[in-house]
Every structure is written in structure tokens, then in C-alpha cells.
Image 1: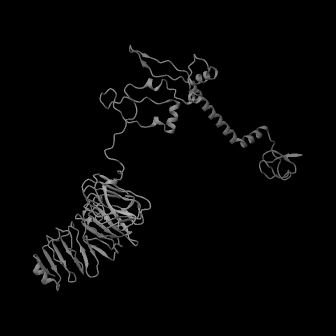
Image 2 (image 1 turned 180 degrees about the vertical axis):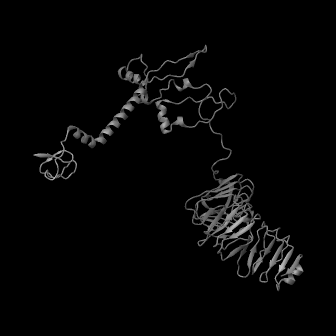
Length: 495
């Protein structure tokens, strides 16, 4: 025995209280009204709702198959034509139509041995997807050397996957213009030979003088370069031993060398550049160093005004950052060299460095007009500064130095030292307490005219440093008053 579901109308066992079709709890007839009669149209409606997604998917698949069949049939039945050709009398001759792809496939299946039919060695894949744009490339090549229009199924795959037809071809001179550069065949022309090699030259083993390295039993020390190359590669091995030291004067007084590359090698104990190993190379712009254990002494690169770049990977000991070569002593980083021709107008000492070590080539950095020190710097290299420098700036909180009107005041054990930028435009300067001017090797400043000197400070007289200084103001009771009145040629006033 069975009964109908009160919700969906499906037949369910009479003793069942739950419909497995619509998941509805059944009630006794006594508790509910009798369900309406289930008609045929109601059953069809419920069946459509249950199978709606399947019907839509099947209809979409059928539509896609219909469109694909239409496109394939269109491609197989199309008869390609070649371009029209001008006859000798000037009339336009329409070329003979070729067979469609479908006709070619039928001929290949049903007439494989028919010599009268147009047969070829093409496979079915070549017929289906090959180029059907008329005659061969040689027959349709434009007379003016231009490129023919690409098309057909073969070119479809080239366009889809980046074939050679998509490569940009260089512009060629017209074929009707006479001259030695007129091409005889179509295609890219060979590039011109570069005037200079893109890679460093091969090592010149015969262009170096060397000797046993007294600091390394496994190495040799190069003492002189004797070649004439503009780009020099220093070999890693000479005479069967590692090159471990570049001695003083190895590269010296040379106006041809523009780049020096040091060849790298595994297992070399170290590579050291001694004092003035690279000295007075007026054309040198770049040095390339290997990722090895390096030893670069102060002033090892000396008097090279066009130096702009050092190529090297950052390692545990050296790094190149914004024109400066920084050295790690095991406790702190400091700048050991600065490329004079690096195109920056401001030098910012990074927060991970303690400052600038004392080296003479820093004076050649004539692009720099300002130096900024962060609050942890305590190495300043104040006197060996570029002659174009206009001001110093010290971050607040630095316990070792501060700035006054662009002047640098660096603390020492007795009196703080004042460093004057050569191009600072200040005309009147008030010295801070417990200070003195640095006059040893300083570059003259032609703008300063008056100085106020407090009693706790000292003034070292030097006409060479301030050639236009005309007036001194001494605090009352200054211990240098009699000395300065005897030696200073300008005016002295007491305040």
C-alpha cells in the first residue's frame, strides 16, 4: 500500500512519516486537509525544476558544438585566392581558384593515386591547419621589398604562440635605391660590430710584472702593469700561484685605462690592494672586484678624478653604497673611499656607519655641496673635504658634533674643532665656547670677514685660511689679545 506526499505528490509507503523526495514531514489525514489532486502538468513542472541545470548545460554544449562545426565547415569549404596579377598588356588577370580544404581531404581519401588531381606530400594536419592564403611566398613577394600580409591557419598558430611572423623586423632600405647597402634577400640584416667589447678583456698574463708575495706563501704580488689596454682584467693566477697582493704603483700614471676588473677564483686566501696600488689614472671610471676576502687599504685608489663606480657584491667586509666604499672592521662600518665623479650633490652617511675615515681623495669629489651626518657618527674627516662644499648638517642628538651656520663643530678631549666649508657664504661667524678653527690642511674660505671669539675659545691665526678676514671681536679678558694685536693686520675690538 502507498500514499501520496502531501507536499510534492510523490508516492511513498503508507506507514512512512517522511518524504525522501522533498524531505517533508507527513501528517495524518485527520490532522491536515486532503492534498489537492496531483495533475500531469504538476509532475512535469517538478521534474523540470529538478533537472533545470542539466537541461541548461546540455543546451549550452549543443550550441557550442553547432558553432564549432559551422566555423570548421566554413574553413574547409573556403576557396583561397591569390592576389591579382598584372599582365603584360596592363590588364588584371584573376588567378585560378585553388581547391578548398574539404576537397583536398576528399581527394586524399578517395583518390590517393589519381595523378590528375592536385596531390602533394601534405599530411592531413598540414591541410587542416596549414597556410591557405594562395600561392607561395616567392610568388607573392612584393616588388618593393616590403612584407606580405600574414594569414591562414598556419599563421594562426604563429600568432597564438608567438611565432616568427610576430617578430619585429628591422626597417630596410627600398630595393629600388641603388647603393652598397641595398639588400639582395629579405630578412634581418646583421648588426654592426660594436666599437668596444661589452665584456672585460681577457687577462693579459704577459703584461704584469710580479714577485713572490712576502705575506703569503701561496701567492704572488703584482708590482707593475706594462700593457696598453683600456679595459684591463687582472688574472687570479700568475706563474701557477694566486695573485694575493696588488703592490704600490702597480697601476700608475696611466691615461688610457678606463676600467679594471679583478678576476675571481675559489680557494684564494685573500686579495689585497696596497697603498696607491691604483694611482693617478686620469681616465679610470670603474673598478670591478670579486666576491672574496678583500683587503683594501686607505688611499689604495688615489688621484683618479673620473672614478664613478665600483662593481662588487655586498659581503661581510666591504660594500659599495651611493658612491662610497664602506669597510667593516669587525665592530663598525666606515667609509674608506668615495668615487670623485659620482653624480650626487649631497653625501648622506648611512645610519649603519660611524662616519668617514681619513683619506685624501675625498677632496676630488667636486659634485658634493653638502654632507649630512646622523646622530651616531663620530668620524668626520673634516679637513679633507671637497672644495665645492657649502655646509655640514648634523642630526640632533649627536654627542660628538653639531653644526653652526653650516660649520661643523666636532668635539675633542680639549677644544672642539671648527671645520669651515670652503663655499659657505657666511660673512660674520660667532665661535661657540671652547673651540678653535682647524687650520691644518684646510681649504681657504674667501667669504668670512668678521669673527667673534669668546674668552674660552682660541683663534689660530692663518691668513691663508681666511684671506678676506678683516675684523676680530675678542671677549673682554681674552688671553690672546696681546698676541693677536701684534700679529693680526686687521681691526680688533673688545666686547
